[in-house]
Image (tube, rainbow, N blue to C red):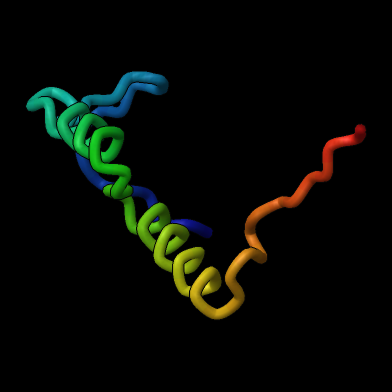
Amino acid sequence: MAAKKSGGLKIPGVSFSWKRALGITQAKQKFARKTGIPTTKSGLERKVGKAVLDMINPGSSKKTTKKKK
């Protein structure tokens, strides 16, 4: 049986985020869009992993399509 979380009254569907209230989330989103650098751990891992794979095997991530004449 799972242990219950102790602490205040929870209302389903209602939550509060202090980061969103202070504007931290929006600032991170704007930074990521302007610089192209992800601010999440998983996003950064994806970007670094792709860069490493591109160095090992250049052109593997690019799709080559031939135009019909």
